[in-house]
Image (cartoon, rainbow, N blue to C red):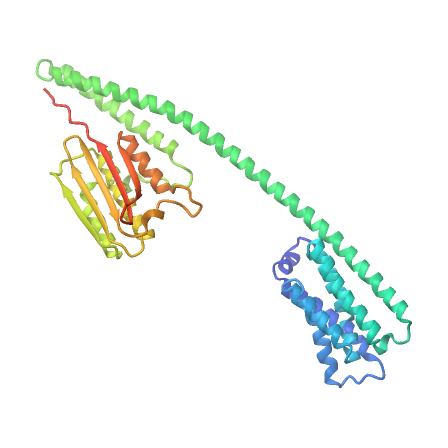
Length: 400
């Protein structure tokens, strides 16, 4: 049954299916050796039967070798008439396979070669099995077979091409439909995210105002300050809930949800020494230099600095080859400077094979731009690659 389990099994294993067909050809060809003048005990009979069936067994796996073996069998029939008997059915099967499997021009060329050698064999050798009929009749009969096999094969080839085109169209239509669904979902998520952003911003504004009022009335009116703090507490809980919803909206489907109990603090610059140690263990010598006196940074800025250094060292490991790397962190009063350099083949580390910018560079730029900073990347004059970032630092507001 077509498209049934058995059919699919043979389609996935063409050598197995064609081997069964070769056994049938072996049996049909063997009927020709039942003539009284042929001795079944002759070992050449079994050799020719095997060689006549082998092209059928490999026709879909190694078609050109199958054609070459069939042509060689035709040439061999000029020396031994038994070879002609063993290859009669194989010629028909291979002729059909050529027409059904190959493009038109290749099919024409292969068919001409196959039947051309057959014609040469009939004209020059005239196997004994054909000697009773005029050469003209034998040639016309073979040409009819050639046209018939070629025609049937081309019809099958056309149907296969049409089915393949329909399958491609169905696949493209399905992919387009999925893309439209994903686009609609993303549009809705962006809309929800904008609304939740407004809600969170409003709650934070309320908390800021209430905190200012509570600080001012803490000594003069403790009850009012306590009421303001209670409002801040309630609003803070609401804000956290809305933030969780916002993150769920922004999370992509391929990102697994994270249990709050499994959340760990994001790394900051205090984790740089651990990162450098891991990179050194991976085989990349790294020199870490810290200029200025380190001071506490906003968690977002510290995480951005860590990710820039991590991405720069990772790119050097992946693409720099044998190299040395350097990391410099400079603490200044109003900005944080980060520089990651190497002396390897890093000039290609931030681009894909197609020449497009990779996601690592885009991610670093987005992180730095979020805090109003600047990022410069590119080859170094003496070789290697350099990543340089400047991130502004806002001075903390003094409370009075």
